Amino acid sequence: MRNYHCPRLLSRLKLDEFEKLHRPGRRLFQKCYSTHSTVTTGTSDPKLFKHIPGPKSLPLIGTLLNYVPLLGDYKFDRLHRNGMKKLKKYGKLVKEEIVPGVNVVWVFDPSDIETVFKSEGRYPERRSHLAVEKYRRERPEIYSNGGLLPTNGADWWHLRSKFQQALSRPQNVKLYIEQTDAVIQEFIELIRRHSKSQKPHDYLHDLSHLFMELVGLVAFDVNLGSLTEDGLKNDSRSSKLIKAAETTNSCVVELDNGLQLWKFMETPLYKKFKIAYHFMESVALELVSQKATAMEKGWKRNDGHQASLLEQYLLSPDLSHKDIVGMAVDMILAGMDTTSYSSSFALYHLAMNPESQKLMHQEALKLLPEKSTPVTSQVLNQASYTKAALKETFRLNPISVGIGRILAHDAVLSGFHVPAGTVVVTQNQVSCRLPEYFPDPDRFVPERWLKGHALYHGSVSPYLVLPFGHGPRSCIARRLAEQNMQILLLKVCRNFKIGWCGGHLDVRTQPVNKPDEPVLLTFDEY
Ligand code: HEM
Image (tube, rainbow, N blue to C red; front, side, top):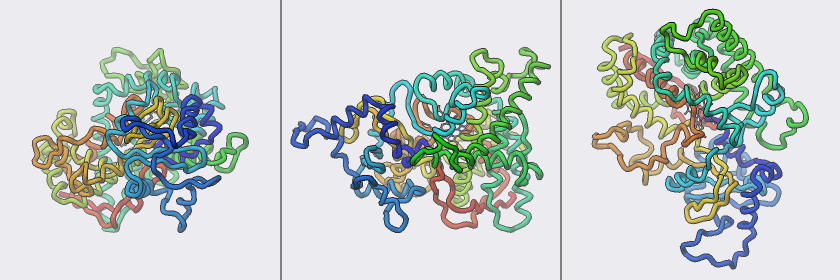
C-alpha cells in the first residue's frame, strides 16, 4: 500500500528515535559495524554487515547527493529505476546509508525475501504515518488509537485481529458482489458517455471516483453518488474525499521525513495534512453515526439479511464507535488510490496487448451472456483468465516497489549477517522484471499463471509477486480489492474493445506507484 514501502521514509528514521525503538537491534548493529575487519569468518559463517555492498556514504550527508537532481543517479520518485541501477551495480543485497547512521538494506533475491518475512516476528513492524498517529492521539474524544497504518506491536494486533475477522471471511466479501456490479454498471454508462466525445480522456479521474464509491459501500454502507453527474464535479463530497485522501497520503511521506518540526509546532505542511485529514474524519463521523442511529431505530438481527461489514462492526462488543470511525478513515486512505492505479495498469496492459484482450473478451462473453448480465460469485469462480491478467498486472506494476519491514530477528541474507532492528525493503517490483525469474520479463503474458498452459511458469517463487505484502501484516482488504478489480475487468471487457492513445506508461512513486502519464484509454462498444 503506502509510504511504508518508501525508502525515503524508512531510511530517514532519525537516529535517536531508531535507537529508542530498536535498542537491542541497534546494539547488535553497532557491534557488527565496529567489528575489526581482521576478524576472520569461516566460509559457512555469515559475512559482516558492514561488508554488504552499496553506494558510498559521505559524512553528514550519507548518500543523499545521489538523489540531487542533475547531480545524482537516483530519483526519489522513481524507486523502481533506482532499484534496478543498484542491483546492476552492487548485486542482490544492497546497503545504503541515505542518512548517516541509518542503514536501509534493499533485498532483491526471492530466497532472501522469504528470510525477511520469516524474520518479521509475531507483530511485523513498519514505520510510517507518524503524523496520523499524532493527530489521532491528540483527539481521544474521536479515536481510541493511532489506527492500523502507524500502530505497531501488540496494540496493532489487538486492533487488526478485531477487524480482519470479518473482512477476511469469504462470505462477507461475496456479500458486496451485487452492489459492486451495480456501481460498475454505472461506470460502464459513464464510459459510454465519454466515448461519444471522441476526445482523449484521462480515465484515472473516473476510476478514482469508481473506487471511492466502492470504499463508501464497505466503510459506510452508503452510495456516495461518486459517479453521478454531480458526484463527478470538483466540489462534490466524493471529489473532496478523493482529494483529501491524496493530499493526506502525500503529506504523510513528507511529514514522516526530515526534521519533523511538526512534532513541536504546526508547520504549514502539518496544517495542510490536518485540513485534509479532518475532512475525511468529518465524513466518517457523520456516516458511521448515521448508520449506528439507523440500526438503533430499526435493525433486527434476524430479519433475514446478512449483516454488512459495518453492521457487524457496530454490533461487535469488541469494537468501539471510535475504532470503527478510525477504520473507516483508514479504508479511505488505503483503499481508493491503490485500486484505481492498479486498475489503470490492468486496462493499459490489456489495451496494449490485443491478443490477451481478445482472450479476456472471450472469457467475459462466455461468463456474461448479455452485456448487462450481473457478475456473480459463480462467474468469478470461473474467471481464470481475468485472474491471471490481474496477477500479471501486479507482477509488472505492483502498487509499491516492495515491502518495508524492521527485522525482529537477526537474519542471514545473501550470506551477510543482518541484525535485528535493521530496516529492510524488499525489491519485488525490480526482481519481477528479471529474466532469470520470468522469461521475457517485460511482456504482459497472463498465460504464465494458467496451469496447464504451455507458457505456465510453475516453478516461480511465491516471494516474487507480492502486491498485497505478505504474512500477518499484509493488506487487510486483499479479497475485497481483488474481487472489485475482477468485476471491473470482466464487465469492461464484455462491453468494450479497449484502446490506448497515450505514450508508454510507467510509474512515479507518490508515495505508491501512480501512473506517470494521463490514463488515455479509449473504448469501442462491442
Ligand atoms: C489493489 C488494491 C490494493 C493493494 C495493491 C494493496 C496493497 C497493500 C499493501 C502492499 C499493504 C502492506 C502490506 C504489508 O506490509 O505486508 C497494504 C496494507 C493495508 N491495506 Fe491494502 N491494498 C489494496 C487495497 C486496499 C483496500 C481496498 C483497502 C481498504 C478498503 C486496504 C486497506 C489496507 C490497510 C488498512 C492496510 C494496513 C494493514 C495493517 O497494517 O495491518 N487496501 N495494502
